[in-house]
Length: 211
Image 1: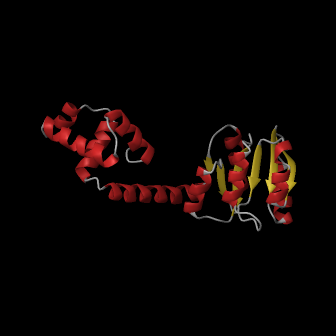
Image 2: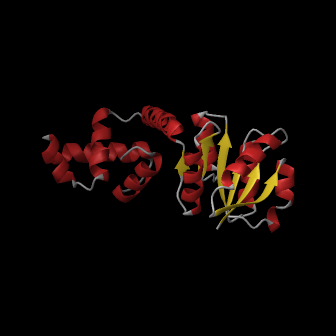
Image 3: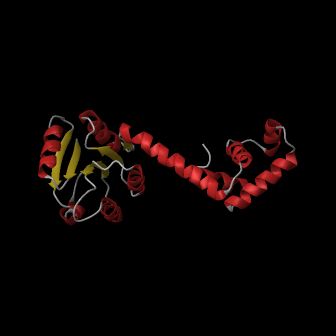
């Protein structure tokens, strides 16, 4: 049984979601809250598996609330169900520990899928938001590459290094000399402020510079 708590400042929304979830034998709505303050007051004794919340609350922002929940090290998963479709905000909420993000216009089946997915330890983003998030991520990667001032050739060599190719193998693939590839590699190390190849690959993956 998946135990649910709902947080929304509109009683009609709480009622509608509750009635929808009543149809499913493996889901039970244990608690409902109209304010973030009430939720935080009961947080230490709240025995649930998934919290479904709106982030547009009058007395507290969604990111502030999720950070407060994170500080308490709550064990339950969090799904945001909102009308707010900004991909930049979605990205922030995921960074703050949210496990699922859906629009209130999402079909019932998507909400149920999200509940089961996050309960199983997976992340769930509504299909209508995934492409927007990808566009933001790609844009940030382009901005980061521009800031680091990596050339097209350096980006190409960086990807090959991350793919596990040796300097000699890269030289052969690109029809360049061993020493030329070494010079490119040294320049990339300097631009990313790392000392060796292992650190270079690790940082490149972390920054999303390589696939």
